[in-house]
Length: 105
Length: 105
DNA sequence: TAAACTGGTAACCGATTGGTTACCTATCAA
DNA sequence: TTGATAGGTAACCAATCGGTTACCAGTTTA
Image 1: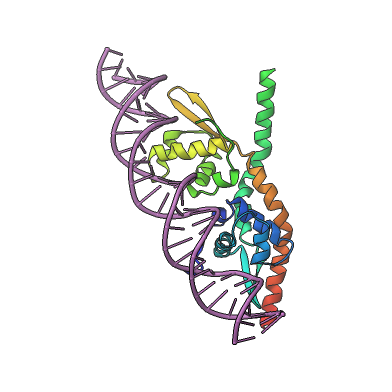
Image 2: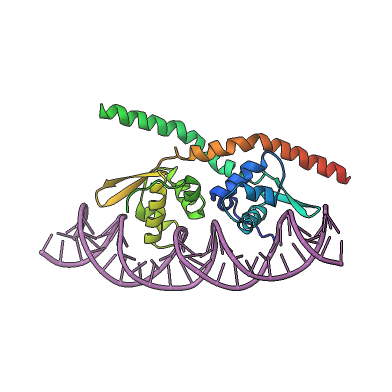
């Protein structure tokens, strides 16, 4: 079961995985420390870490008997790039909302 | 089956749903026009539109016998907001990469 | 060396997902 | 008024998901 290319959008669609990434912003963590933060079993966390690893959102390094996971935010640029095309629409849709509300008066 | 609050991250995790949103940037479309663009059945598109609607990413308006779907990009702000905290890390992780490459020389 | 700790993985489970076909209602056009 | 068009939804299906427990291999420590 190798490291296959996995969609970053999918990796990030799970709330627990996002929370793991959020945690790793504070610095690398071993698995058991990450697992302590969530109300799920350690194997469940291992699975999430695998998905994040396959999406290249984390890297790992063995250190003694523990395995440190590091945040790698680079793939999030793809999400950002996709969002980019929508930013110009936000002001427009707010204008539409304003017009809609004014029509109601 | 009402319009329940649905996670925008989940709504956007599917490639077909993202493509639908991309299409709606060009303007509102009736369902059959959207369905023409994808190699899946119309009911499948209806389901995707329902998910997008539940996530408030589209609005709909009946017009004759067709139902027009409009893009509403507002909920994407939540994704953008989450990403915001990672933007500052991108330059850092690029610096790490640079240092890593230099170490290899 | 034996016991404890760290963490991956296999096997399994129920829920959800994305797809289908079949069927229905509503609207428009001939 | 009849036939065609638009589109929602139910029922079903296989695949995937997120979770579990059980088990295993390394590594550290007493």
